[in-house]
Image (cartoon, rainbow, N blue to C red; front, side):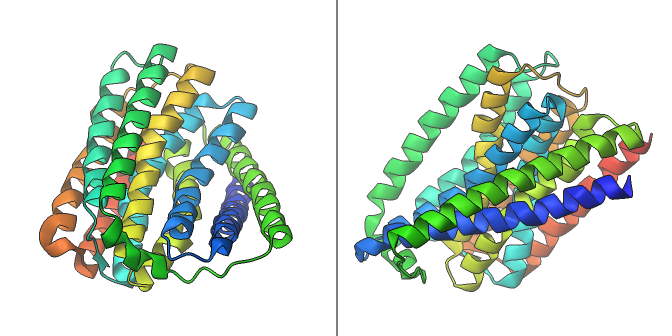
Length: 316
């Protein structure tokens, strides 16, 4: 079991390195235009938010672990809102100014409710997958329009230190990063699968506690870096976007590729907990537009309590 968890931990580190390489490579490549634009910062944020979850999803599907993947989807979303945001807020207060980011914070609990309703029948059908993907695409279009309407307010985010690089170097960074992300995701899923067998635990629970946390931690450097650089909108936006994409697009793709069974606790425990946490975070962001270190500590406590609760349930 320790060997399996060690493999998962190594995979999480490799996934983190791969995600960071792709995000920085893509951002630096687009920065070659040399314009005062938010595009490089947004591209790097989007890659760091989306890549780890989809890499893990592909690895889980290749290894035929749909229940592990579903646990990773929900666990990753919860860890983004609690663990990642909590650590970032402790590193530096997260000041949010963009209405698009606040809107994204409201969409996460709404997505948790949608997924909870769809799994009431204890499974995610292909129709459920279509509904989740359609809802995600509509929401992302609304977010893009909201961000475009705030163009003057986004200029400060363009101050992110992204150094332009040549095309060859950009390609090497991206290709190498993608290879690392794929390898890391495979190691995490393989280690999580074998640990579930060794512990005789439901793969869904191991996905919650191991796979999901690994996905969330892969984007941590970008979130903490944005926080320490006084770019709270990027930090909060990346964490919330990752959570939203996990429980809509990732869950939708999973449902279309392989219909996973839903754990009996999902609709009555894990998703309600995610909903409550995301809903509690929303007024934190609205209160004077700042997520303080004290509130970050509260989020970390919520994460620890949730993990302890899942361990007690698994042991029982």
